[in-house]
Each structure stands twice: as structure tokens, then as C-alpha cells.
Amino acid sequence: MKPTSTRLISLDALRGFTIAAMILVNYPGTWDHVYPSLLHASWNGLTMTDFIYPFFLFIVGVSIAFAYTKRLEGGFPKPEMYKKILIRSFKIFIVGVFLNLIPNFDFSDMRIAGVLQRIAVVFLACAFLFLNSDWKKQAFLAGGILLVYWLAMTLIPTPDEGVVMLEPGRNLAAWIDRILLPGKMWEGSWDPEGLFSTLPAIVTGILGMLAGQILLSNKNQHLKANYLMALGVPLVLLGLLWAQVFPINKHLWTSSFTLVTGGAAFIALGACYFLVDILGKQKGTSVGIIFGANAITVYVLADVLSLLFYGLEMGGQSLNVHFLNAFTGMGLSLKFASMLYALLFVAINFIPAYFLYRRKIFIKL
Image (cartoon, rainbow, N blue to C red; front, side, top):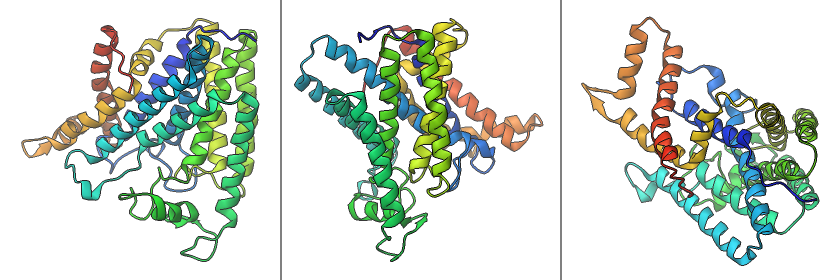
């Protein structure tokens, strides 16, 4: 089947809105007053916020399918593509480590794991896999990883405990990270972006690649949208069923979490593709497209800008507190004021994103 190379507005917009959502939940006016849906589940369970990161990894997978299908058809030599994949992965990883170091740059207390670091590893693994396998092998590998991860986490006793455990810091993934992961960990004795839990995160990227290959096929547009949404539903249901024996947990990136969020991403992409690319309902997509054009760059800028807004004091208080006080002074509740500040911070980050987009500057880490 000859794939199409037409760029999808829905994919570009979905990528951008996902980054905007990341910024929204990462930078509230105060962490003491946040709506529960804008927080990650404390351990087992799922909130709206827990969908954001897997959605981005899923989109990374879709983008790999589009980018490297085009390169393969253009006759690009694989060794050259391997080199560029390695370089890009390294750059994203190093930027992630840099963000962990600022503002103090204390190398003795450096955290190696992180959000961008996991994105780099998922991109590296998925890109190499895409260049050397077909969709059947990718799907088989994805299923195999989820099964092996489940069996390992639920059958192998945690060495420090002597029994199987799935508690914070007291599980096989945390133990492996304590042995193999250099540097400090986010939660002291464990890290939500650790080594072992990155394996099922790679599956999230593989699911995105499978979705991308559906969109690249020569099937009817309506059929593509139907396939995406129809595949998403059983993935969610299977994930919910699996959750009865392997709880939905973002911190461990459990197999059930992978399927529920991956299935939801299939449905969301299918719905966006149908509405935006098939029906042509593109009103409002420009904001997402602008954010998505330099997605990782905007994410990095938000982290850097947060140092100014949360760290710079004026009159004895940081900028975020000044904004929060102004909103509560209008009679708004603390939670609503905290969310309003987060929305304002998203809007502030839109300014450099818009500047880059207007000048056709696309920074590819």
C-alpha cells in the first residue's frame, strides 16, 4: 500500500494542546490549592492529568511513523538516519538533565531521570524499531513487553522486602532503579521516570506508531478514523480489565495504565482527525499548531520562565504570589485563582511560541 504524506492538522494541534496541558498542570498558582483533576493520582488511580504525558509519548510515536516513512520512501540511507536519531535523542536527554540542574547546578545532587529523558529514550527505541520492523512485529513486541512487565512486577519478590509489593518505593521497579539508576531520585527512594518503568512507556510510543501507520495507509479517510476509534475502545476495556490484577498506576506505568491511556489516545486522535482533517472544522486549532510547532522548546522555556515567576521576589513575594493575591482579592476562591494563574502562565508561554512560529523558526532538539 502506498502511504500518503499529507500533513495532518489534527496531529499538529493535538501535539500543541498536549504541551499546553503539560504547562497548565505543572505550574499552578500554589500547590496547596489545586483541583484534584489537575493533579496526578497520588498512587493507584487515574485523573485527567495522568493522560497528558502518555498522550505526548503516543504522539511521538505517530510522528515517528510519519517522519521516517517519508525518509524511507525518499531513499535516505539507514546509517544516516541512525546517526540523526542518536544525536536528537542525546540532545533531548541532555536538555532534560540541564533542567534538573537549574538553578543551582549542584552536580553532586544531580537527577538523571526526568520527563525529557524518558521522551528521549522512547524516541530512540521506537525510531530504531520502526526502521527495522513492520507493524505486526511492533504490535507483538508491545504485547510482549506489557506481559513480561506485568509478570515481573507481580511475581518477582522485591529483594529488599522478600515478598511481591506494589507500594511506593517498595516494588521491583524501585529496587532496580536504586541499583542501576545513577544520581538522586525524585521521591528519594524511587523515581516515576525510572529505568524499568520506561519499558512500558516505550509501548505507549509503539501504540502511536501503529496509529500513525493506519493514518498513512491508503484506506478511506472515514475508515481510518473509524479504525482508530474502534481500536481505542477495546484497548481501554482491556486495560480496565487488567487493572483488576495490575492496578492503573502512572508512577509505575503499569500495563493497565499503558492500555487505558493508549486506547484513549487512539480515540482522541481518531476524533480529532475526523473533525479537523475530514470535516474541516479547524477553528481554534491554530493555538495548538503554534504550541506544537516547537513543542519541546516551549516545554523547556516554561521550565526556565518558572524560575522567574516562582523565584524572583518583588516586595518580599514572588510573582506567582502577587498574581494569586490579585485574583483572590477579586473574590475568587484559592483553587480557582491557582488555576487562573496556571492559564495565565500558559498564555505567557504562548508569546515566544507565537514569535517563533511567525518567523518560521522551528527548533528541533
